[in-house]
Amino acid sequence: MHEQATMQRSMLNESANGRFKRSFSSWFWGSMITATVAHFGFFAFLEFGEVPDVSVHVTPVALTPPPEVPIPPPPDAISRPATPVVATVAIDDDVTIDPVTFDRNPPDRLPPPPDEVETNITDAPGFSVYTVAPRYTNVDEVRRALEREYPPLLRDAGIGGTVLVWFRIDESGVVRDQMVHAGSGHPALDEAALRVAPVFRFTPALNRDRAVPVWVSLPITFRAN
Image (cartoon, rainbow, N blue to C red; front, side, top):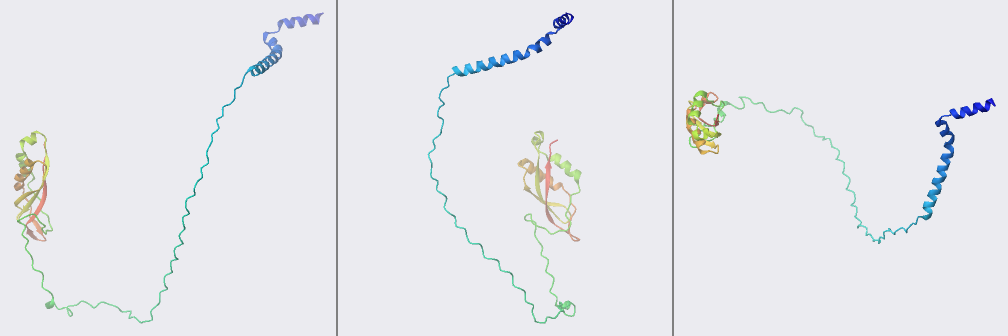
């Protein structure tokens, strides 16, 4: 009697989680059976249509093989170089050049030196032989001439340019002639450069230790501030 009362009290005190665990098996199997019956009933009443024919019919095409390319024969083997033959002729080992001495070439038989040919460079710019190039020395005077001869219209408009000028310089370094070698694209600047050219003062060009007249080409640049 006491044990039955204890069992009843324990059943009353059992939690909802415990009751769910005890009923889980019946709920699980009941759900599985219901789902299986529902699936079989669905597929039993479902009508399946015929699958359309999606096959592709290909007409066989006969392929013509490419013509056979003849293979050329291999090239001829390169012949080995001939074995050098040692000569049997005796050669004197003492091969020298005859000494050059005044006894064999006396000074009185020497050819005369070539005459110096004076080159006239006054007509047009040309090649002049010199060993020391001339350089201009009056930088400040040339700068003032550039400012003075700069055409005002071009200077105010900010237009500048470079004129390549030929200078003919005599033996004392004085400019004797000038002409435009390459223009600036502005005739007014080219004319101004020719007016500035005579202001240049040069050191003489030297051919060894002798002053010579030369043509040189120098740029004259007008730059607006």
